Image (tube, rainbow over the protein chains, first blue to last red):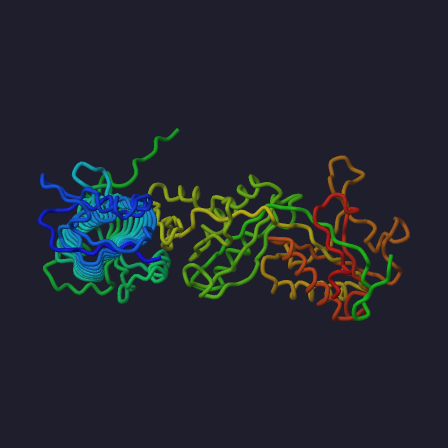
Amino acid sequence: MNALTFTLRHAPEQRLDLSLLTPATLAALSQREIERLSIGTTRLPVVVGDMFRLRGSEAGRIRFAGGHERLDMVGHGLAAGEIVVEGDVGQQAGRLMAGGRLVVAGNAGPLLGSGLKAGRIEVKGHAGDRAGGPLAGEMAGMRGGSIQVRGNAGDRAGDRMRRGLLVIEGDAGDYAGSRMIAGTVIIGGQAGAYPGYLMRRGTIILGREPLQLSPSFVDTGEAAPVFLRLLWRSLEQDGFAVAGLEGSTRRLAGDTAMLGRGEMLLPRKAHTVHDTKDVSSAPMAPPQGIGPKPRKKG
Amino acid sequence: MRKLSLNGVAIDDTYAEAFGMRATAIVITAPNLKWARQAAVTMTGYATSVIGCGCEAGIDGTLRRSETPDGRPGVRVLLFAVSTAELQKQLEGRVGQCVLTCPGTACYAGIDGEETLKLGANLRYFGDGWQISKRFSGRHYWRVPVMDGEFVVEATTGLTKAAVGGGNLLFLASGWDQAMAAAQAAVDAIATVRGAILPFPGGIVRSGSKVGSRYKSMVASTNDAYCPTLRGITISALEPEVGSVTEIVIDGLEDACVREAMRVGLHAAASLGPVRGASRITAGNYGGKLGKFLYPLKELLA
């Protein structure tokens, strides 16, 4: 059987909500029923048949031939199977995915993989702001699974991330890993200002010194933690490109403005290109009220 | 009893009787083999018999860098107990006291199982709130800050209910040196069998036991039928030429591991011949009514 293929007829006139076009929904529908699904987001009605030419029948494998930045919510809630987009996608691609695999050959808009629970997202181009992050009002961003961005990511990548793996092979904007609850963010290229802003727990691994380091991170010295060996091996197995990052062994703890139990790993020889505050040489009183509350005795 | 022999060594036409057990395996790694092995030796100390130690444990073998989860040298340790609860207790106690404390080590699951035992899931609390949870490729690890860096421990390991404990061989020889040579040959050969351990000191036990005792408080006592100094006084199983007897006890993750270990052990010991090694090889059983697994020696001769 052939992958169920949606060939984009022309650039959409309005933003499209493609959250219905997942294997779980389409498996039970005939081609005609699929063509009648409403995907519009304005008063002007739009159905699948208006925008896409359908071919193939295997609903477990969905292919979008041609993409556009107005294609929103692609792979929303995907639980199993594969969705491949041969082009760009709009916002919230792979939001609340619980399994399976989403591949975007082009760029992704903001909130890529928002609230991801499980499964894997790969974007071959760039990603917008708040990759893996929560929608406004949500307590947590991604809570499992993995997102791989081969290009760059916008601001606040991994915002409020709770669990899982976010790998940005290129550069990242400001506040990468902001408000992280836990999980792992890896940025192979250049991170912008204040990575780990207000993070509680979790790990941020940077291939380079960030543009601006938050002063509320504390240098805990050089280390070669064993868990990195597990991480690199796992990344290699899962096909992530991490070459050159293995030397990330200078460890900062933070954000001490919050719980302070997160960590940021930087290359051993921190070559200060930018005006970065060197927190290691600044005398600093032991942070107060950081970490677990002391247990009552007796 | 029919007469069997291998390389001039008399083999009794009898069988070893073994029991079903609960078992688990873990992998201990370290920056070098010395410290991985040290942790394993320490945690498998005082683990010879479930009669008095709670569990039986031993080193299954060393692992190359490519065979361990973190790419460091390591060893695989097997633990056997009579119940899941006891196995859990022994595992956590021994890893907590002997591996967590050992410099440089990390500890991972050494077996997959549908059912699991907690490995680091409770040990993490040693971190006093500073412990870090990490999940990579579907596996869950805990990072516990310790004074030499970090102790990485996998949250759980597998449990098998197909394990077998109590496979055994008895080596009857003219003297102590010959009985030991036969046992040592078997120990060395069994070291290559994956999934089988010999829990006694150096793999060898000299105090084979029988069930029961004349004393009420003892559940097991010396196997007087095989004690050379009691020949003539008790109902002895030893012929006049036998001056010393050694035994090896084998625990395996499954029936096939024990069978293979007994096979290679029997052949290795017999290869010494009746003069340098054992003149006779037999096995211990309880009449076949107690254990679920029987290993007839004649089936191992081929």
